[in-house]
Image: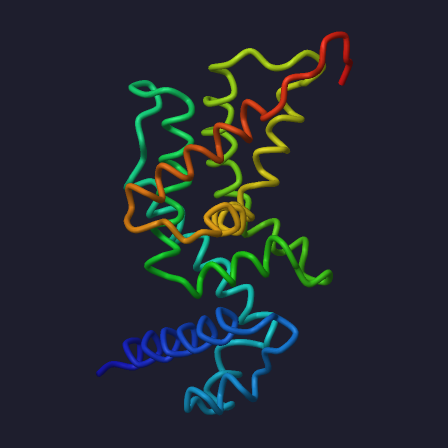
Length: 211
């Protein structure tokens, strides 16, 4: 094995160990000591490639965003052939399929997006930028299929859709409290129901009532 191959394998081993830790525990609970001890990695080797915990967390986040983006790109749902609701449902389902295959990467993303360490927020935004831009282009194409409610601008609606993006799995789980999901078809149906309510609302204002 060449030196280049050994270095590649070492980096891969460290990445997997870090994904296991950050995908299992909260950011604050993860330590370099635990990463090394639980995965039989020497500190000398780890510090040869990475500066410490923050460097490893950013590595995991960046790698996860990259893999998620590649997966979504390979499984794109053609918006022009389907309704906005069908396309948006399929988009979220595609993301859920990725996280179903890589469950620990979900926690990595949730830690980065929902509970980011304050000192890493700017770096996390940089890592997120390519995926954020792809998401925004997709959502814009969905939003522009419908007239917006009076008083709402596209930018506000985009922020709303983005805000539910990484919390969608939690919404899905709470909505399926009875545990009736049996297969992918059931998940798609439930996702469609949730998105229908999120996009089009659940209540009609009373006669003469202003919102």
